[in-house]
Image 1 (tube, helix red, strand yellow):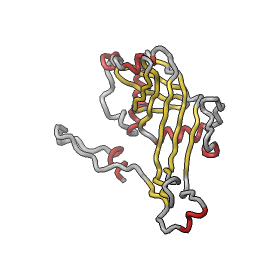
Image 2: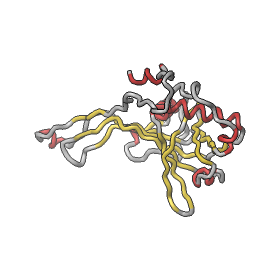
Image 3: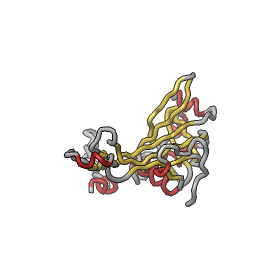
Length: 216
């Protein structure tokens, strides 16, 4: 897939051996998370907002109300910082100092591009919804023009980004390995529970296979 150019903003300076600029690594982390955090400056104040997103090739899509202060600011073309983190485990060391987490993360810098065309908007919303739950878009009612008119959609090109990861056991100081303190990793996994049926759902509507399959 290739490798992104390293910039002053994306170069990982602390523990650089944990960094990756490979697009394959970056895309895989983005595809494995559900929520990103968007950092931006609004009226001189730093803001960080969580939101759902979707990825297609080298573009990330986000959406929201056209009245959103964040999305209004994005229309001006100011730089945005986007981050994603997946926690894979708690790393318990023998010393308090060396406790850590195993994780996969992305930090990227980008300029928002607003999508105006209704057909392109709809396609972007499909990408976002199917990222949240694959194949959901194929079943639901699609947005009408009124709904599209009150929805803002933006894309972010993935061309200035870096990944950073940690894996493996704790790294204690040599003298601490003789301590009688339990050490190791507690893995963390995200799983789905049994779907809860809407009380207003008609009796003849059955749970679709694409939802049933995520329980397995």
